[in-house]
Amino acid sequence: MKLTLNRRAEPFMAVAGSWLAADEPASSMLLGVCFELLSGPRSEPGTEPRFVTVEQSGEILMVGVQASPYGLIVHPRRDLTASTQEALVGHFSAAWEADGLALANILGPMDLVQDLAAAWVARRGGSCHARLRMRLYSLRCVAPPPPRAGGHLRRADAGDETLVKRWFYDFSREALGDDSVGAAHGTAHQLLWAGEVYLWQEETVMAMVAQARATATSAFVGYAYTPPETRGRGLATCCVAALSQLLLDRGFERCVLFTDLNNPVTNRIYPRVGYRARGDYYQMALSTAH
Image (cartoon, rainbow, N blue to C red; front, side, top):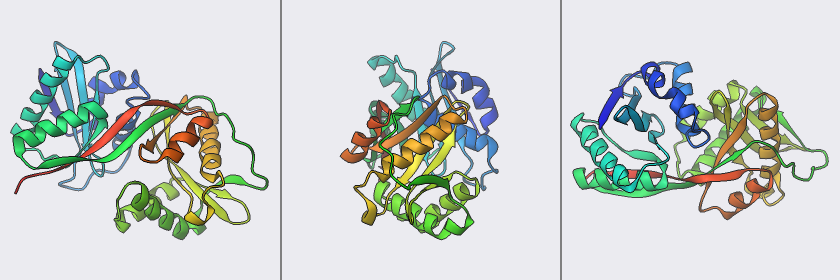
């Protein structure tokens, strides 16, 4: 096996871009992050992304991107045998350690990231646990929910920034277990000024959703949030359905989203508007031995 590390997205995408594009929506998370890195500002020193390709006999077995704030995101070839995955995990862990690289989080298909995390802990000591358990869904055609009289989706503007920042923080704390105010507010500000945050408006603003990232063919829907006092009314369903239709109308082939596997409500409501499950993904958190 051959492991290649890059610090720039361009050479990585030259090798793996078409391979990843052919495997959407399974690869959409990693590919969307690559698009962000290609078009976004340069990273601060010490936080530069790393791009990894693992090949055997000229065939890609797995690719990965390590970028803040995601940690390492991995995407494997679909038809890996158990023996090939075992060899891949061992080779990757040894090579990553030999290059002196750290691992704090690994996100990807459930079985693979559990194996990678266990192999890393076996080499370096410490422990690992599933920080996030998610299900990937994709949609090509919206099944509209029953309309709500007087309600509509609108793009958030500068006057909504205080509310949007508060709701992004509430979403991050509740859904992701992340109570970093600065990170939530920074993401909210960035997406708001990119025109990618939307609000469900009735007499007052009732709920929120956003386009989180995109590839050439897929748009990620995320940050669907309804405050506690307006939950149970179908507002998140209306938000997600309306934004998904808007994105399809703009020319995207599909919309993609993640749900929390521990939240039975989201895993029940989004299939009702046309989303179909595509696989389970974990983010494994790693702690090193002291």
